[in-house]
Each structure stands twice: as C-alpha cells, then as structure tokens.
Amino acid sequence: MILEKYLSDKPLYYEKIDYTRMPRVYEKIKSSLRIPKIIHIIGTNGKGTTGRFLAQALHSIGFHTGHYTSPHILKFNERIWLNGKNATDELLEVSHVELQKLLTKEDSDSLSYFEYTTLLAMIAFRECEYVVMEAGLGGEGDATAVFPKCLTLVTPISFDHEAFLGSSIKAIAASKLNAIQNSAILAFQDNDEVYRVADTIALQKSLNIFKINEFIDDVDRQKIKIISQNLSLATYLSQNLSLSVAALKFLNIKYNISDFKEAPLFGRLTKLNKNIIVDVGHNTLAASSIVNELSEDKYIIIYNSYKDKNYKDILSILKPILLHIEIIDIDDERVESKELMKRALGDLDIEYKAFRGIKPSNNYLVFGSFSVVEAFLREYNG
Picture 1 (tube, rainbow, N blue to C red):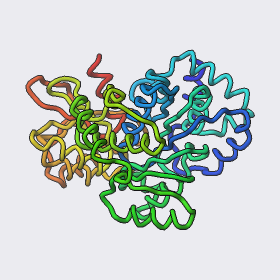
Picture 2: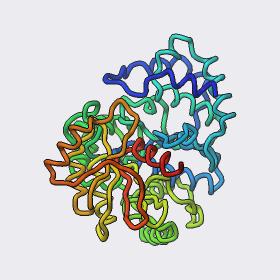
Picture 3: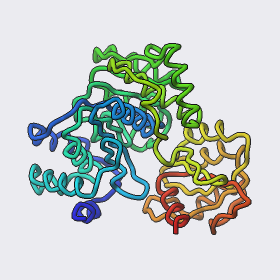
Picture 4: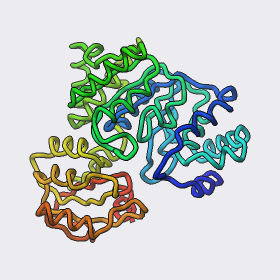
C-alpha cells in the first residue's frame, strides 16, 4: 500500500507537539472537506468502546456512520470504521490520493502520523451523516478538536499522559474539557474535581455541560441492563454503553435494544478462550476497573510498559488478582528498560519472569497497552 509506506516515514510519537500545526493546515483545506455531524469523545478511559457502541447503534438505526478510533492493534484499517466494517485498503488508498491533492507538500510532510490520519479519516467519511470521533491523547490541543461538533462525550477522566496534559486532575480535566465547543455530556466521574472544572469552563464559555443522569431514565436503565446481559458486558463497559445511550437521547434519536447487538471493540476484557483475557488498558483507572471485574480469580499477567506510564502504581493496583508477572518483549522505542521494570517489580515484591508462552492449565491476563496486546497476538496467532 502506498499509504502504508507514506505513514511509515512519519514518527508516531513526539516529545513535544506543535499544537498550532493541525489548526493551521485544517484552515487551509476545510472548504474542500465535507464535514458530517461529529460527536467528539474525550476522556481518559472508555473512549473506544463508548464510540463503538454509539457508532454501531447509529448504523443499526439507519444512519451512514463512521467511527475514528486509535491506536490500532494489528492493522491500520481498524482506526477507520465505516457502516459496520473497517475501511478497505482501496478506500484508504483513494482517500490518501485525494488528501495529497489538497495539501501542499510542505504541509503534508509536516503533519504528524495522527494528524495526517485524522484528515484522512474525514476524507473517507465524507458520505457519512454522523461521525464518532475519538480524541487521541488530549483535548483542546488534539488533532480531532479542530472540527465543528454537534456534541462532546466525556468519559471518566484520570491520570494519563501527564507530560502533555498536566500533573493534576484539575489540569488534565481543563485540557480535555476545553475541547468542548457547545454541548457535552459527562460520564460519571470518580473525582469531583472534574465536575468543578466543568462548571467553571461552562460558565466561562457559555457551554451546555450535562451529567449523564440527566438523560438516562428508568426505561433506559432497564434497556441498558438487558443489552449488557445480552453482550456479557463488564461493569465498566455497561457504563460506556450508558454514555452512548445518553448521546442518542440528546440527539433525539430513538433506539431499541436490538440496535446494540455487537460486542464492543476487541481488546476490552476480551476472552480469547477460557483461560486468556486481553485488555489494552494502560493506566491506573483501567487497572482499577479490571481488578473490580476480575476479583474472584487470580491471573498470570503478561505485561510491559512505556517509560512515561506510572507502571509502579498500576502494578500495585493489580496485585490482588496477580499470581506473577511475565514480561513480554514489545518493539517500541518508548518501552521501559527491563532493568527498571524488574527493579519496580522487586520493590513491590512481585514475582516475575520472561514470557515464554501459554500453558493451558493457567489463567492469563494480557494487559499493558495496545503494543502489549499486539505483541502477544502476533505470537499467539503464530
């Protein structure tokens, strides 16, 4: 694929981000783009599943719908979902050619991997009525924030990407919530500071920021309970489902239980078989959710971490469900050194060894990031 080669030359990660670049480039080409109704999803955890629940429902109800999510696990096409399926190679190639025609070479070369693919998605989604667009790591400075939105959904906000977003919940919440343009719905937040920041921003910018319980009534709760049972959803996934239902209620779109008939995105407490669960969570909030859900058993956890993650806190949270850690190799420049990882495990009195394969008699949880799950699947699938 020409697109694959083109993207391979762009760095995936930056120590510093130029937040003026995407708005500047978008301003030049926006008149050539057809922008559908965009539902923007920001927050720390649950963006992908909330978005997929909502996109699947909109598609089932009869709308031409796109869902932009990131990162991918095995193939880039996972990021651009259109009317029930991942984008085809052909659609991506055509969209790439069209985007190249709109951009100057200088702008094309300057855009980051994520910025370019965000614009690429908008080309691919040009015939859609609704697009559910998941932010990358941030809020107001995120590449996805440049587009006009009809609604913003805010999943639970916690600590993550502190180097870019800030070292306090107040700072992180402000960075994310400043992406709201007009109306937003807040999922239930564990930290009351998020609500206080939302109230301040709503007052300063004359925004309509609602809480989820303003849209979910007893009938909805019963429907959500039935859908959750039908799909065997973990508790936190039911909460993400509730936020997607609240979005439909805000948009005055009637829904039925049958509109939610697909499982959420792969890699969210997904059972590969009876003894292997994979989850792409990679922060303390995700770890807490998993411990709450899996508290009745013990697992060998296949794990690794990036340098910028507070993995010591994550591992400490996971201890109640932990037999031991098996460190899996991941091919990423951001990965923590094995020496420092082993030191942290030693400090926490957690047994560990290198991952060497699966034994049918043991229960496994693969956890730590998209890269960890990708590395495991490539070995597991052979």
